[in-house]
Image (tube, rainbow, N blue to C red):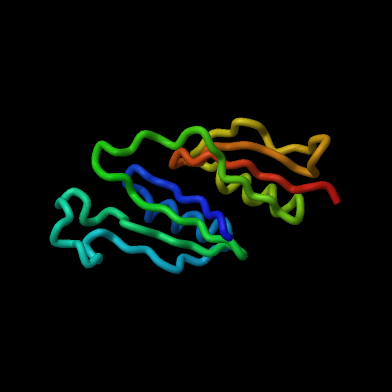
Length: 135
């Protein structure tokens, strides 16, 4: 069994995935706009340039996403994407990059359970928890 986060964006899926690819040392394996799908002719004009599906490998995991249909985006609420990093320096690097143009909910710092832990919401509204466990 595999569990993968699937993020829905308000028209910025492609930009977000390109950003995550660099920030998280991932590799986009698939990104398809509605205009490139077999159902392109049935797609409303406003959705043709939007992303139907994107998939990216990050380590051994997969992050997936797409753009919401018009008037279908309700925001990203009630969850966080949690990343566990091997070193405090890697946690600090990723926290800094993901928080650019976003907002910090809890600064990245040492806690009783982690060498580093912090929470942020990135520029696309995706909530993240960054964790680096104790040695």
